[in-house]
Length: 261
Image (cartoon, rainbow, N blue to C red; front, side):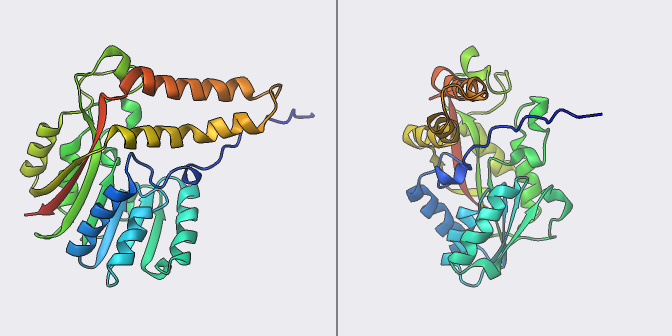
């Protein structure tokens, strides 16, 4: 029996070609966050959802006595991160783990980054449940001795959510909390807040543009009669529509500089 070959899925440029960080985060703000961890950490720093580990690499460049482990589910970004870490002279102090971080956690950490990765400890994204900040913060607190740092970044509401905003997300008004509630949760989970940040609209626009740039570049590089063109154009339209006609200026991103107490 002759099998019909399955069509190849369109291949897009990896996000690290168009984004410095896999988050709405400027280089200036990232410098503040990495300096905070480098100045207060001791031993091994963990990064949950590290992507290509730019924040970890910057932290190791400042903290020459530190080591680090980056966890992520995606191997492509980690492969790029390994290459960059070697090029910048910190590859011997940076380990990567592809897969479920909870299966290979050390008993203690010298510092932690957790940006956009709270779902590791709560319900999966596919379950469309409220983001469980408390579960994530409690679990991370158990890894840290008093005085050690955590940079915790995750989604918050910055304005009252609308039906258009929640539709492309989990479809619920209680998916995220507002910043004052997040600060209370962090305190209740055993942290003191040293500094609070909120991603600017410029940071969000740059992130969303970089996130969809792979689709846009594919459309520019392939002919109008390409059989995958309609599919790729639809992906681009869905994502840009979800942002610009939906959650822009409603979904925010908080970055908290925390110390365990």
